[in-house]
Length: 200
Ligand SMILES: C[S@@+](CC[C@H](N)C(=O)[O-])C[C@H]1O[C@@H](n2cnc3c(N)ncnc32)[C@H](O)[C@@H]1O
Image (tube, rainbow, N blue to C red):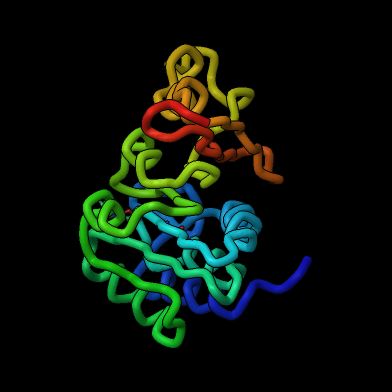
């Protein structure tokens, strides 16, 4: 397995310092899983001359995967509501001028900077409003999904899962669910295929 990029290691240290979990276990906000970060890196690497957005920075773990992979002419803006976490993330990217860490509300701040080529909706954001912020051809990613095969038989998500319903029913998106290599977690990814008037 290749080593993690130095930026990702810095973000990992910041997570430990502020007590942010690196797994989905536990109650509070957690960093994205490394496999999610690696998936984001694959998409970020294709954003030549592009703009990447993230709603919910945490301390910048997912941000770091994207920033380490994105082309030299790409920029990234990430928004975090919590002041302490935003400050920790700013430290992580102190030597990375292409990354802007904003302390504020994700939708408000990202809307000012749209459209995005890639948007990781990971905190305080509704996927429906996030689609408005990506350009046609851009990608929307959302994680923290449990594969259907692992849901208990009485889970309400078996019949109605707002996240999956949105990604698969919104006519602006072509989406799929990607089960991560641990087979215990998955993410949703959609590509925007039409503009506000419904034209492709
Ligand atoms: C799951 S964590 C983010 C993890 C991070 N994206 C990563 O990959 O490591 C969710 C974050 O969203 C932040 N958040 C919640 N509501 C928000 C909002 N309205 N605007 C910006 N950030 C918000 C929380 O404070 C929390 O730090």
